Length: 89
Image 1: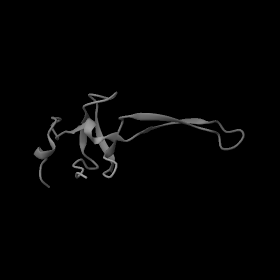
Image 2: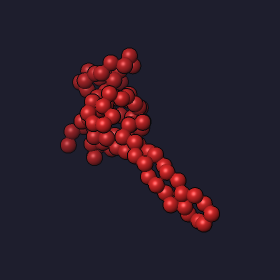
Image 3: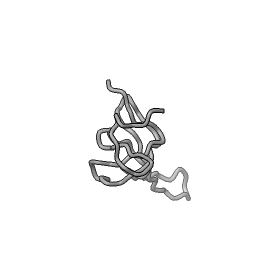
């Protein structure tokens, strides 16, 4: 298994899929699944039933994980960079 080079807090751009061209910040990473959750990308709606009588049901919108192959790392200036060009910490 390859090492996941994108970490929480990185700014990334989507290069494939329905959100192609959008950018966002990584909120979570799942190295074993090779996926990350990006703020405002791959949004999904979930309808919740009312818990008791008299309450209303609600719709919750949240970001689903996206495959790492569909995103590209960006630098502070907003330019796309390769993983091997990442600044050393």
